[in-house]
Amino acid sequence: MKRGRHYLHLLILLAAAAAGPVQAFNLRTWLDNPPYAGGGTAQEQIQCYALPYGAIGFSSHLLTYLTAFLLSIGRHPLLFWNRLKRRRFNIFVSAVGFCVSCPVTVLTMVRCRRTWPFILLAIWKLFLSATITIMAIHAASLIPSTPPEPPNSPAATPTSSPPDEYESGRRMDNPTVPSSSYASKSSRRYEEEAYPHTSRTANNTIYELRRPASAPASPDGAADSYYSSRRHYRERSYQYTSRTATETSYELRDSATDDAADSDGRPAPAERDANREAPARRYPPSWSEQFQRIWWWVLLYFVGTVVGFVGLMDIVKNNMGTAGRLRAVTGAFGGITLFLVLLFVIGSMFEERDTNRRLNKEQGEPPRDRRGQIAELLSNFSIVMFLSFSVAMVAILFAFYTDWALAAVAGDLL
Image (cartoon, rainbow, N blue to C red; front, side):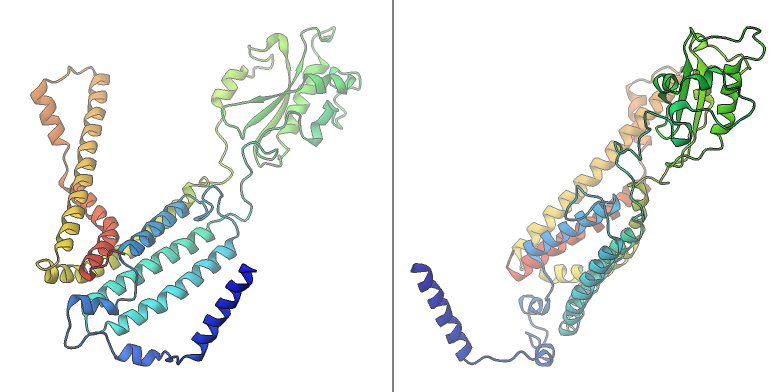
C-alpha cells in the first residue's frame, strides 16, 4: 500500500512538471551570449568553460593516465586483470568516446572565444582526448589475431609423449631398419621409456627415447640395430614441424652412456644443451612489450601541454594576488614537483655511483676516501637529466594542477 502511494506521488510530480512552462534550449543563443560582458571577472569567464575541473576533472585525468598505462601493458582498462581482446570493439569504443568529447570541446572554444586563455585550455583538452583515443586505437591494432595460450595450456607446454608421427615409438617406413631391431620390438616399451627432457628454454623440447642398460646389443657390434634406428629417428625428427612452431627432436639414447658422448662422436646432453641456440619467441616481442609502442603518441600530448600551459599561466598571473586558494595550490604542486625531481636525480646519482664502485672493484682499484666518494657522487649529476625529468614531471602533473587551479579561481573545488 505504501509503495502504491509513492508511485502516485511520483506521477503527480511528473504531471506538474510537464504542465509547467518549459523554456526551449537554443544552442545559437547559448553560444552568442557569453556569461560575461566587457571581459568580465575570472569567476564570470570560467562559466563559459564547459569542461570538467576541480575534483571531477582530477578524477577524470587520473582515470585517463591509468587507462594509458593499462593499454601500454596490453590490459583491459576496466577489467585490468584481463588482456586486451576484440580488436574491432575496442576501436569502435575509442572512436565513439572521441566523437562525444570533441564536440563539447569545440563548443567550449566557441563560447569562450573572447577569453583566449580558456581557448588555449580547450585546445589542450582536445589534444589530450585525441592522444588517448589514438593510443587506444593503436593498442587495439596490436592485439594479435590469435592470442597466446596460457603457460599451463596444452598448446603452450610440452606434452609428455612425442607427437603423432612418433607416438608409441613405432618404427618409420625405412628399409634400413630391420623388423627385429630393438626400436621395433615393443612399442609399449618405448612408450614407457620415453620421457620429455626440457632444456633451458620452454619452447625447445627434446624427447629422448632411452634404451635401458640391459637392452640386447648386436653380437658383432658393428651393425647394431639400435644405433641404426637412432640415426633413423634423428634424421626423420628434423623434418618434423611441431604444432607450436618450435624445434623438436626425438632421439634414442643408451642409458649406460647417459653422461658421456655417443659412439658416433656426438657430444653429451649437457654440452648439446649449452651449444643449442635459443629458439625465436612465439610472439616477438612479448605480449607486454609490443604495446609499449603506443607511448610514442605522448609527444602529441606534450604539444598540447605547451599550448595549455601558456593559457593557464595567464589566468594564474591575473588572479594570483586575489585568490588565496590559488596561491596554496600553486605552492603545493610546485613543492611536489621539486621533491619528485630531486628524488629522481639523487637516486640516479647513487645508482651511478654503485655501478662505478662495482666496476672499480672488478678492476682491482682501491676504494676512495670520503672526499673522493663525495666528488664522485657530485660528478654523476647531469643538468640535462635534471631538466629532462623536470619537464616530464611538469607535463604529467600539469593536468592535475590545472584542475585545482581553475577550481580555486572559480571558488568551487568540486
